[in-house]
Image (cartoon, rainbow, N blue to C red; front, top):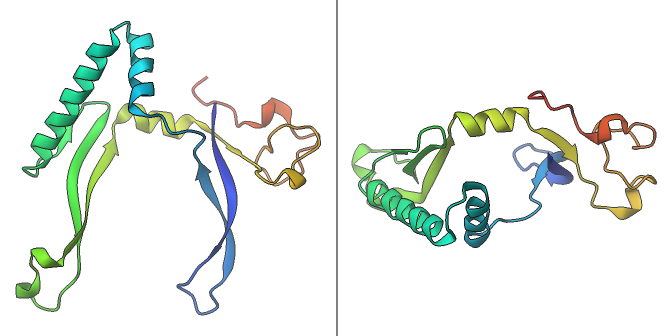
Length: 162
């Protein structure tokens, strides 16, 4: 399997010319909801679905309990969750109050399993414009060619873990 990306035109407003450039954007094929995740864990772990749901619900409740007191929560090789927020800068220290806080968020830092996976997964261009798709019907290999005669290896980069 490969991560997919699409090419999008983006206007950068930070330069005087407001230059338009092309950038790669990740393309999410599907969103896996809680039910789908529980079903998959049930199949892989041979644990009843109700038990999986109960454990995950308990994990979520526990994460909330600890993050509400400002704790970072480490789940070993899975990763770490920590609460955070942004703040509007002020000229004087006394002006920094809870009113200047903004963008409350939870930051997830992946653990070793996810870091290894993301470093080794292949990446493949997804051409959403059917009028520009190659005649072979196979995905573009992402190297900027026309896709014809260049599909050695199925258009994916080799898997370094193999």
